Image 1: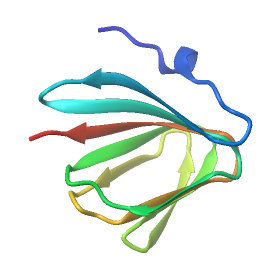
Image 2: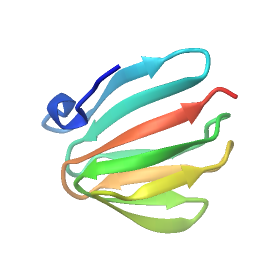
Image 3: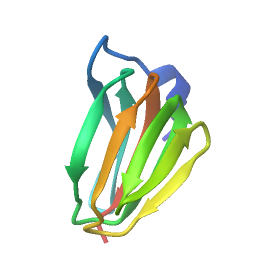
Image 4: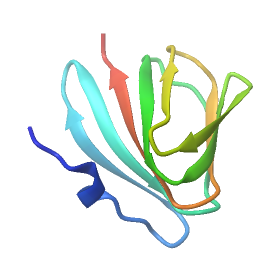
Length: 100
C-alpha cells in the first residue's frame, strides 16, 4: 500500500475529520485533521498505539503531561492511558493502534 499523507489532509472550518487508511486484524491507521480551536476531550483506548504529527500546532495531554504537537512529534501511548488534544492551528496527525 502506498499513501502520501500530505495529499490526504483536508480541514473542515470548525471540526475534526478522520480518514481510515488501514483497518485489519493487526492494526488501525487513521489520519485526523483538526481545525484550529477544536478539541478532543479526555478519553482512553483499550489498545496501545502512537500519534505522529504531520503538521500544525496543538497540545496533547497524556496522563497529565502536556506535549506540544508540531510537525514530526511522536507520542507513544500505552493501552488505557487517558489523553486529550487541542488544536491551536489546523493540525493533522496519524493515529496507529495495535490490535495485538
